[in-house]
Length: 209
Image 1: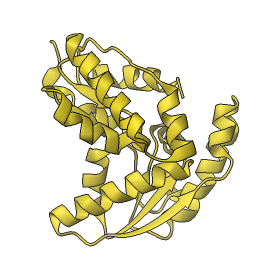
Image 2: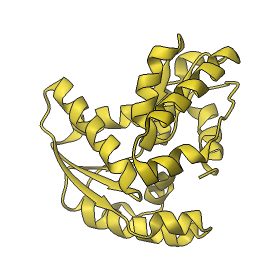
Image 3: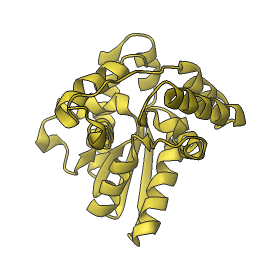
Image 4: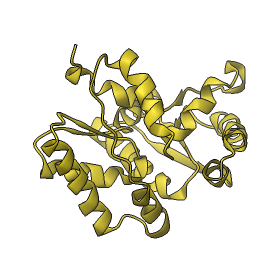
């Protein structure tokens, strides 16, 4: 999923302003989580990357992979700079919009951390929260094997279906966000929330200009 740094690089100027962004990419974190769930070594490695970022002069860290969001939260105790989950603002917005929340993912590994975040966020705000989940079979493999068009077709079909059953639809992975912009509004009856733009906005206080 190495295309994601470019997605966030494009968003930063408009949503935050001038920042000196440095990407730390380790795709084995996601591969381990897909294969084994959240491992103790994954938590340790995310914390180590956070410490490395702090020691390198970073003033904040944005973790852009929802599947390792739990590790990102635990790493906050390891550093003195803020660590942001990309999907936290999306979760806050979702529980505000409606009680029936659809969660759509291309990876089963992403469903649980997103579901847990939504339920916790709803409980903190005393909001109702009924979650309906769906995985887009074959979409992640298509993207991984260089067929983004097929990925987008699968995701778009499931967005249209699930959006008709809920008050708000959450796309659990940043890699899914571009699909929504290409869908006609009349095909998507519920609001669809994605994480990249709102996640990036958390970095607003750290703009350099």
